[in-house]
Amino acid sequence: MSDLGHNSAIAVGGIATERLRSIVERVERLESERKALSSDIKDIFAEAKSAGFDVPTLRQIIRLRKKEPSEIEEQETLLDIYKKALGM
Image (cartoon, rainbow, N blue to C red; front, top):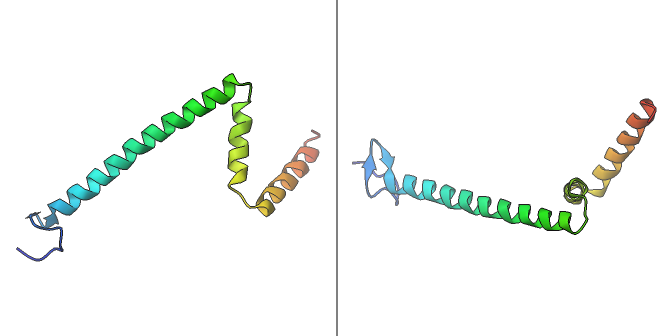
């Protein structure tokens, strides 16, 4: 058996099984956490809606907060130009 690294106590078909298992289990754990977080976010939006907030607008605000001010300004300028071009 060749040396496949420190996590290769058992190798099957040239694959370090412990390393493979570790990777798969980490991804599964993160997917589970992501599912729980998505559920929490959904609950927060439901709370916001019941408090009278417009959820699509909240989502848009959250997207905008991730951008740089210059990106937002450029996007708003283009939006204004397009709206004027369409007579809106």
